[in-house]
Image (cartoon, rainbow, N blue to C red; front, side):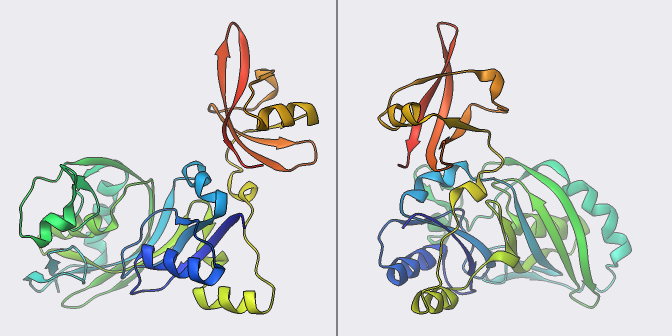
Length: 297
C-alpha cells in the first residue's frame, strides 16, 4: 500500500493514537502522520501509508484552523485541557475593540510556545518538564500568519471569538489565543480547534476512521496518490532508459532550462506518467545533474 489518507481526527485521540488505529485497520506497520494535533483538537490529520511516509517532508507546509478563543479565562495549558489560573469578567470586550488587535497577529510574528507542548528543551519535551513542575525558559520563535478571518462572535461575560487562521508551520494557535487575551488585559484561552487544511489536504476531503473500515469492508477504499499533493513542486519526465538508470541510483544529465524549478527538489516521473520519486539538482562541471533523493519504484 502506498499513498495518503486525509484523516478527520476525532477529539480525544492523540495523533499517535490515530496512526496506531490506521495500522490495525490496514494491517500495515509503515504508517506516519504529517503534523501533530492536540488530543482535544479535530480536523485534518494527514496520514502516510507505506513508502509515502518518506514523502511527508515534501508536502505543502501551510495550514489553516478554525479556532474558538474564550476571553476572561487563562489556563496552564492555554486551552481548556489545563487548570484555570485566572478568571475574570470580559463583558466589556466588544468585537469592534477586537478587530484592530487582529492586525498585530498578521505577518511574521514572534510567539512563545505553550509550556505544555512537544517542543524539546535540553533533550526533554516541554510538557514533560511542566508535569514535573519544572519552570524553564521557553525560547521565542518566529512564525508566519498569512490571514485571519472572523467567522463569529459571541458576546457575554466570557465572550468567544471564532476565527479562521491561515499560517505557516510551527504556529501555535493556543499561543495566539493566550496573547490576544493578554493584550486585552482579561486573559484568553483556546476553547476549540479544528484544522481545516494541512499538507495540501482540506477538511471537506477528509475521511473518518469508521469510514475507512466501512470502505475496506465494501472494497471501495483507496489511497490518495502522492502526485496530487506534490503539485507545488516542479516535475521532470525521464525517458525509459533514464528512468531505469535513475532508479538504480545513477545521476542523470538534464537541461535545467526545461524545468520550471523554484527550488532544487523535483518530482520525477517516467514516460508512462508513473511517479518514480524525488530528486534534486546539483551543478557539477557546468552540467546539471538530477540525483536520486527518494526512489519509490
